[in-house]
Length: 375
Image 1 (cartoon, helix red, strand yellow):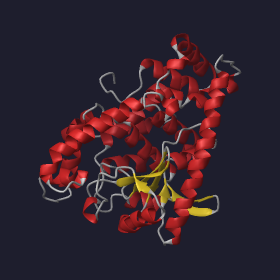
Image 2 (spheres, helix red, strand yellow; image 1 turned 30 degrees about the vertical axis):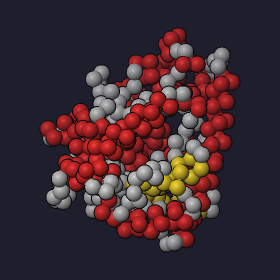
Image 3 (cartoon, helix red, strand yellow; image 1 turned 180 degrees about the vertical axis):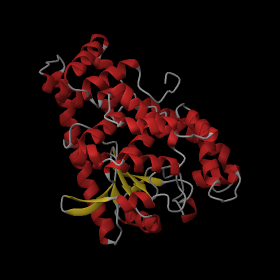
C-alpha cells in the first residue's frame, strides 16, 4: 500500500497499534513509536488521538512524560464534544418538530455508541442525514434557525443539485459546523441511494430527543468508504473508528450485508482495501471467510481506476469520477454543465474564475490547519 497515499506512515501505524491493541503488542508498538516521536511536532491526525493512546497506556500501567498534555487534550475534546452534541440535539429537535426524521452518523454516533467517552475522539462537525424528499424543507429550517452557510459565495442548493452532491455545510458558531446530508455518500447521489441505510437504522434517544442512528454494519461500511481516500489531514481517525466499531459491535456486524453494500455501489475496491488494512496492520477481528470473499471478489477495471484516483491528491480527477457516476444515473449533461451544478455558478463561463478562486482558498485553508490545536 506504499503507493496509496491515504494510508498511515510507518510511524503513524506504530502509534495506532499503541493506542488500539492490547497487552504486549501495544506496549512494543508504543516503545517503538515513542523512541522517534516528537510530541510537540506530532501530525494533526495523531494529536487528536492522543487521549485514546493515554487510555491504553493507563490500562498497560505505563507512565509517559507527556501524560499531562494527553489529559489536557482529553479535557478540550470533552468540553467541545459536549457543546457539539448539545447543538446537535437542538437541530434534531427542530427537524423533528417539522415532522422530519433525521439520522446521526460519524462523530455523534461514534462517541455515543462506540467510544462512550466524550474526550476520546475529536468531532470536526455534526453530520445529519435527512430524507431527500425533505432536503429542501430541512435547508429552510436551518435558515430559520439562523445558521449561515459555510460557503456563501455558492448559491443555495436547488432540487436539481440534490442528485449532484450529497449535502451542504452550515456554520453553527465559531469553529462549530453542521454537515446536512440528503445522501450519505458523495459517490452515491442517485435515487434510493440511501434506502438501505434508512431501512436498517436503529433508534436512539439523545438527551430526550428521539432520532435514528446507523446500524453497526452500516456505520462500519460508511467509516471505511469515507476513510479510504486521500485527505490533507493524516488518515488515522477512520482506522480508530473502525476498530472501535468492530470491537464494540462484535457479532452484531453482518459482514455479508456490508459486502453487498459495497458491491451494489461499486465501492468494493475501497471496502476491500480497508478491511485488509485493518486486519493486517491492526489485527482487526474480521472472519477468515470474509477476508477470503473480499479477496476473491471480482472488481471491474473502471472501479480500480476510480480507486487509484481517490487515494491520491487529485481534485480534478475526483470531479471527473463524480461526473462519470452521475452519468450512470442516465442524466445526459456535459461535464461543464455538471460543474455548473456542482459549483452553483450562473453559467459555464463562470467556471474558470470560480475554479481559480476556489483552488486558492482550499490551498490556504489546508495551510491554516497544519497546527491542530488551533482548529
